[in-house]
Amino acid sequence: MLGLLENIYNKLINIYQILNLLKIIEVIRYCQPEIVLNNAVRDRHPDHGRAAKLVSDACSKRIHYCFN
Image (cartoon, rainbow, N blue to C red):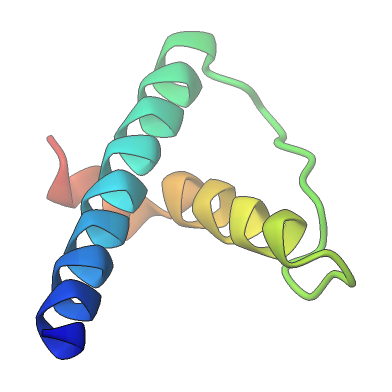
C-alpha cells in the first residue's frame, strides 16, 4: 500500500512541476525580457534551488519548442 501511495504522490509532484513550468513560460513569453535574473540552482534552501531549476528550464529554448 505504501508503494502505491508513494507512486501516486510522485506522479502528482510531476504534474505540479509541469503546470508551474507552463505558468513561468507564459509569463516569460508575455514579458519578453532581455535578461532573467534567478537564484542559484545549488542553494542552501532546497525550494530556492527547485524554483531556480524551473525558471532555468522555462528560459531554455528546447522547452519553448516542446510547448508551442
